[in-house]
Amino acid sequence: MRIEGFEDILSWQKSKKFAIGVYTLFKEEKDFSFRNQIERASVSVMNNIAEGFERQTNKEFKQLLYIKYGK
Image 1: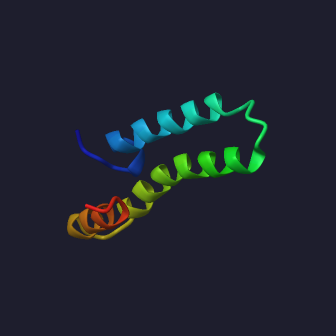
Image 2: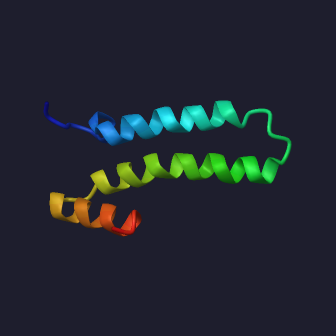
């Protein structure tokens, strides 16, 4: 399977499902600042993968992932 866009990356697809789950789980949380922080963090994973995909080379993309996830 050829990856044409960041939407084709399996980890992006899984992070999207995760973010949807977080939004569903926290939809009735009364502490709005806490809920907002958790929701933004869950979406951040998707954003980081998309940002990394826009890098010009696989080496740059791998480096971004290592930096983002502390590996």
